[in-house]
Image (tube, rainbow, N blue to C red):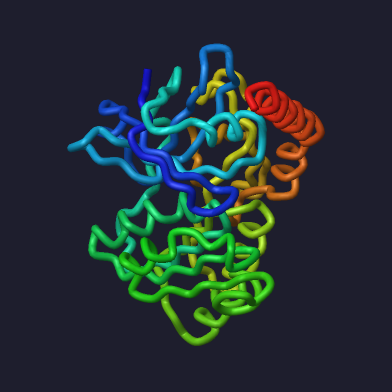
Length: 287
């Protein structure tokens, strides 16, 4: 069993947990992920390692409550335990040779972008970060990004905090203003990554995106996390769990990835609704 040793609500929808998992903490690197189960009979879900401390054995995960499993996870408290916490899985983010980086995070994707930005900074890289959210109330990890960024830009869709608009606006302003980067890292919703790639493409700067498709076993056996990439003019299939989760942003077929990701939306919505109803029923009985 893997005990929860720290919990913090980052906003009404996003929670940070620190899990005591010494073996995972010892080996985890930026860009890798874990697969957990809340209970023995629960579904497996992948979550990116937001941070790891080999000294204390703590692994940080940050997640948004969007379905039945993340709802159950969000209701756990310090002292509770998870049934499974497997990792680190996937390939670490490739950072070699990057001296000037632009890190772009959207929403809860900032939890994935942060350890990448931190690793780059620790390697002596100049890091400029752009993070975007729908509104002020949803802003997370601002202090953490400020501490490891040479320059930080914050945008919100409604203009309630930082610059009004989406992450592509400061990205375009930086690039058109002559800023030079060895690589761009974009992590967030598929549509955000797609348009960040399109914004960067005219400047011919390499761009890495982190993909989080449907995933079950995390070993490449189930095939659920397959992605289509265009390499050397031909379509090839990759598995996010073993070939990624990082990929060349110019090669990813974002439209296909979005279609596959939405295949179970109705089932997920139903499961979430059922979970909420069970919680309400339990609270009424105990009240």
